[in-house]
Amino acid sequence: MGNIAYEEYYTVDDYNLWEGDWELIYGMPYAMAPSPMFDHQYLSGKIFSILEEQLDACPRCFPAVEIDWQVSDDTVVRPDVLVVCKREQRITSTPEIIFEVVSGSSVKRDEQTKFTLYEKEGVKYYALVYPEHKRVKIYQHVDFKYRKIGDFSNEGVFKLHIRECDVQFDTGILWKKF
Image 1 (cartoon, helix red, strand yellow):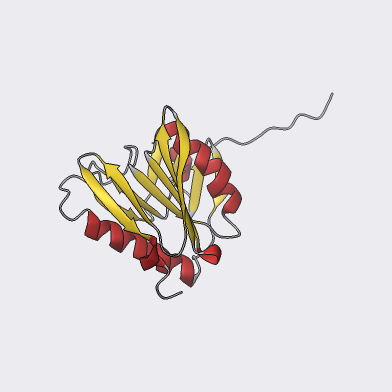
Image 2: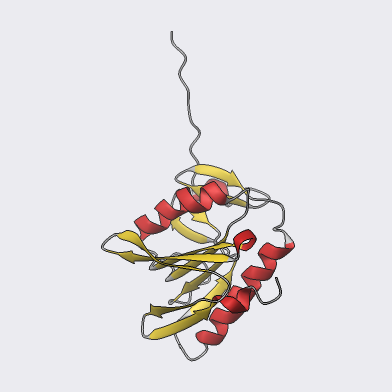
């Protein structure tokens, strides 16, 4: 009898019973850090405030910070900041934009696992924010794939079109106090 490795598989029903902060991606649990570091939280707040101001006149689109997005029965993620254009108490619709603030402990998950997931699910824009390098990489979903539309540093402005609303995002605001 050979060694058989069994991989555990979890669902949203299991996820809903767990204590602490977790993400569930394709049935695999990922423990989240107890609390993000100050720079991470500060940048998430700045991103949210920029999006909130830019989307104030957009009646259907809402930014949110660290809220669960239930992708499927075996996948729940908690992006740092997202924008949805359907008001739901529990997010199940695909977000228009997701921002992830990348840290040493999250780089592989943000650049690979979540990149692939968000691409597959059709998230229109995916932004990776690198505090150490004062850089934001923006990807746009085009023809079922992500295409890099920019690599913005200290003073860069990028424009995103969400439904009938436009967002002009000035990365210089993010790094103003860094």
